[in-house]
Amino acid sequence: MQRRLSSVPVAGRTVLAVLLALSLCGLVLSFDAHPAGAVTKRAAAVPAATQGDAIVAAAASQAGVPYCDDGGGINGPSNGGVVEAGCGAGVAGFDCMSLAQYAVYQVTGIVLPSDGSQLAGVGTFIAADDTADLLPGDVTYWGGTLDHFAHSGIYAGNGEVWDAVGIGIPVQLHTLAYLEGIYSYDGAIRYWTTTSTPTPTPTPPLSPGGLTGPVVGMAASPDGTGYWLTNAAGDVSTHGMAVSYGSLAGTTLQAPITHIIATPSGKGYWLVASDGGIFTFGDAGFFGSMGGKKLNAPVVDMAPTADGNGYWLVASDGGVFAFGDAIFQGSMGAVHLNKPVVGIAADNATGGYWLVASDGGIFSFGAPFYGSTGNLKLVKPVNGMAPTANDGGYIFVASDGGIFTFGDATFHGSEGGTTLDAPIVGTAFDNASGGYWMVGSDGGIFSFNAAFYGAD
Image (cartoon, rainbow, N blue to C red; front, side, top):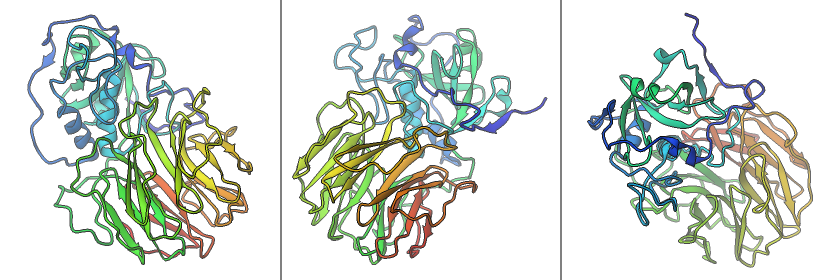
């Protein structure tokens, strides 16, 4: 049989959605807690050999958590506000897609959107008739098509799937045969790489390099002599002449860290979490946060004002939150977006800011518009942006390392078209040279007309 295991090109699969409304999972009728086909054993506690195995372990760690319509997400189980059997007021749980969101994010740092939109070009498609090609950690889809499905789960190997199948049924293993008795099988998407992952070792003391887990962002010192990297746990590594001002290593977080931002002086940095929590180090000031407040969408980035006495946060729905001397200039929070917002950059010349979406669409607020790729079909989604030193332009980077320059930003090269070990998750300008760096989720650094200070 001819195999059909192939990377998903945007042009060929622009309608490939990885999510439907989370409530679709609840279309399953209520069953007994352990229906026929349920596998009640827990996964064996063995070291993860691959990212896929780690995704399975993350899903397995939630075994027994209740099913809750609209509940759960990348931060874990929650109550979705729907009162139903097994999930009353105050009960925290998952529905089918939020369990997949949680497990995939814990390992890869990829945030599967919860609004039914797709991550253009992200992942590898495994056709429905190629179940022999499934690997542990693949996300399986059921009950329609990949852009209109009713159920999803995490393939665990041996013909079994971790899922939250429906009302009254907690997270557990089910066999493929059992699920096929309820739904038609639509196929699967692999969001992880098949590169082997070594058994984790204890985190070393804070020093150049050494982050564990996926890197989520980078920040450069204003003079171009170094940079910082951070992972979702808030660990920080220093490179070049960048000074360590501390980290969140060993701290229990309410939500994962999504970015690190240097202060204008370069003598400190902020870490921002997906719940809008702000953590300050060095001369970074605290001017407020969204931590503890109910958000419509997770916070994905932050930008400081020119003097460092304020900052803006942006959520994936384009909502903007201003603190300190940051002036609110507008947002996309009440507008239907084609793609989620993934970054924000401040225009210090005007006091405005730009937002960038995953399709490269730019939204300007009190800042000049220099161009976008919003009407183009990108090979991979955009996931970070940075302004030039004099705010006369900006760049943004795609997950395949493609670089797009606008205004006075100069193109010095990219990794577009290159096979990468891990997706690119951020970029930063070298203000000294006019070049730039990009960082992968594995901590790999690519420098273009910018000094290389080491990788994780």
